Amino acid sequence: MADKDPITTTPKPILGAVKRLLRPLVRLLITKGMGLPNLVELLKEVYVEVALSEFPTEGKKQSDSSVSILTGVHRKDVKRLRSKKDKGPQAPRSLSLHALLISRWVGAKETVDKKGRPIPLPRQAESPGAPSFDSLVAGVSTDVRPRAVLDEWLRLGIASLDKEERVVLNQLAFVPQKGLEEKAFYFGRNIHDHVAAASHNLLGEGNPQLERSVHYSALTPESAALLAEAAERAGMEALLDINRKALELSAQDKGKENATRRINFGLYFYKGASSFKSLRPEDESEDSET
Image (cartoon, rainbow, N blue to C red; front, side):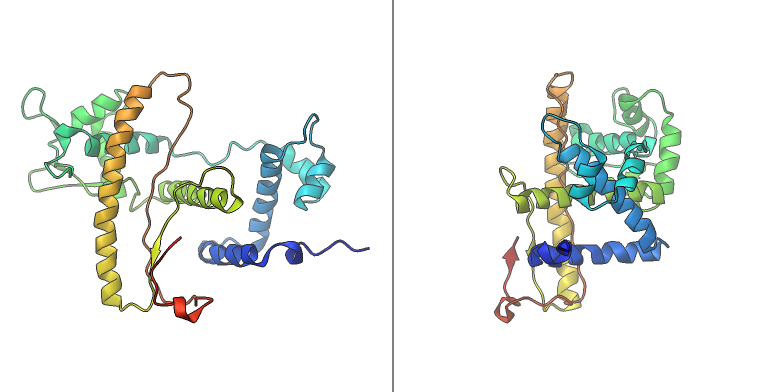
């Protein structure tokens, strides 16, 4: 008796959702010259990794055959991939420093204005104890020159210099405008965490994690642009608020044995053609949270 087609045994709502979320990813891959064979090889690797880490066999080591049955990956490929040593995606060395500097800049009272917005910083302190870009860098790391950090920020579009040669922070959250390696790292991490939170909720694994959105259709381009501006303002306020709280708590938790958790609070705003139709026509004009 032939095995059942795995496509037909997967719930249709899951298939539809996966197909939809794959569309922008496939568009990216085609644009960057990555074809189906490369993606299939990656998928095999990920299936084996997930099976080994998330679906252990109680009381015994997982065999290549058991992993093959669980994932559908051929046993020879399982054996080959198990022996492959891959540390996974590594963040460019400078990213953690950049992210920490920005969080300090937008989270410390002395480097923001009354509305909580980051103020321009002179390269060097104008008086003893006054905030400056050099002191900001020195307060985080003494192993790197402030000038080197500034040059990199100017290259990535994170900062600029005003007429007074002060350093102006262009982005309140670190998502570089330039630099493929840097942007690719945040693309992978942020989309991973979003999908992980949504998958956690879909599988009903414990208490739901925050994963919400507000969506409308049948809007004019002008209305969509106004909503994009409003979303950016509200979103940045939320990010700054969480950053200040996280900066405070991370200082309290430093050195504690149980400080083993990470968090990622993000936001996104998408505007495009109303190409996906609702299952129920009467829902088209309704606002919704999901």
